[in-house]
Amino acid sequence: MNATSSPLGAAPARHPAAREPQGAPAVQEAPATPADAVERLAGERATGALRGPAGTVYLAAGQVVHAESDRAPDLAALLTGCGRITPEAWQEILRVHGPRCRVGDALVEQGRLTRGELELCHLGALYDAAFFVLDATAGPWRFEPGVRHWLGPVTAVGAHRLRREVERRRQLLERIWPWPQLDTEPVRPSEAGIPESREACAGPGARGRHRRSPSRRQRELLDHADGRRTPGELARLLGHSAFATTADVRRLAAAGLLATPGCGTPGRGGPRHAAPSGGTTPDRSPADRSSSDRSPADRAAPGRTAGGLHRRVPGATLTGPAQAGPVRAAHPPTTAAAHPLTAPDPDIALLTRVLTLLEARL
Amino acid sequence: MPGIDECLSGAMAIAGARSASLVDWSSGLALGSLGISPTGEHETAAAEATDLVRAAVESQTFTGAEDKRAPLQDIIVTAGRSYHLLCFIDTVFDSRLVLHLWLDRSEGNLAAARYRLQALAEELVLG
Image 1 (cartoon, one colour):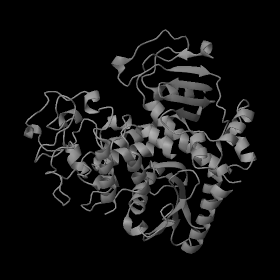
Image 2 (image 1 turned 90 degrees about the vertical axis):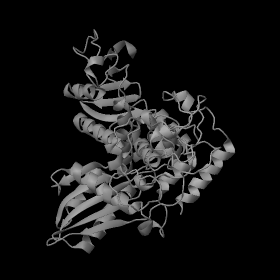
Image 3 (image 1 turned 60 degrees about the horizontal axis):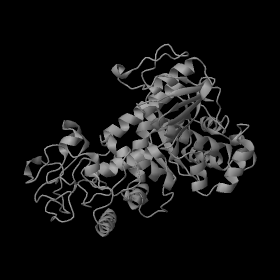
Image 4 (image 1 turned 60 degrees about the vertical axis):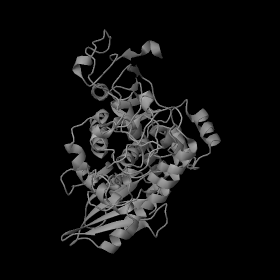
């Protein structure tokens, strides 16, 4: 299989400067982005698999017919996770019909899924995975012509439409809470357990002063946020769309219910002077956020010690000016320092989550 | 056995239908659309319908006393010249989908359209 693959540039980054022209036989000039590559292949009415660091996009006669990413639950995870198909039955269908690339048809013919269910599940999984596959900027990428997916034909999406959707989703995440680190790092409950503002749970559309409690799926996420699983792993575990999970993680972080990497959280020892339950919490409406030009790293909270532990500074707020801290690191801490491998104290973490949940139900 | 295209065609066959869209409200994506969009672009209409759906689904007022898994059946917006019907689709696997029908008030019948749309949403999943 690899013998027939043709590299599409080592690192199709978004920045033209990062482009590395390769001596690829099939491609004259490396595409600037993975989405460019898909569009070019679509223009050539190509059939095959475009493999990147975050997953694979499958084309048939220039149409995108499937996508898979290790960051998004696939059809098997969605259908076996909800109990619709047992893992054994799935394996059997895959074994019998996979080699002939007609697993999709077999699922319908055997009455395990209706045509509508198959299409809905497939399209959802396709867009979900494609977002993460095409959003990856670093290489290596390669195209394997002629490769077909075992699912077989179900539905197809045009390359241009897919590209626009990936771009729209990226912008949507940015509007919710512009911290891309949240998408790939383990999801941690906010150590303070006190939401700064719950407005953001409602997303960019709701800017009212009223508070909104987390939705059912958001509460499920909070229940499973253990500081170890990434949004992608949580999505797989819960059988939810990875993009929707990623968006919810950003909303919950914006609401202060999940910790934002690089954004200081209070330590367990300090008093919670700045964490009242009343209405004096800082307002982080989307407008405020967009007007702030500070980078996430600049917002590193005061009171962080060299060991990466957080100490609450009395009177300090997460968004407030950073001059209040008696001990302040000159530079934002490294990721490793900011995220100790284990929770500082499991009991405190548990209590914090219980507190968060109780508050969420107020 | 109906797929997405047949479902949307069926919705467009409802008397007074101007457009029909299948919207994934977890992302704001229109998985499929037929007819003319109220905004000129089905993508915009899907994103804006998503805002409305999310506001309703995530509000305690509308869902607090209901079944947690599928609290809402549909949302109806009555405008001066048209109706908007947003019918929730319930799938076994996790999904967040609505069928959005834009209906002309003078040509359509709200009760009949709502009944038919509900049936189409069920047929899409149940076959």
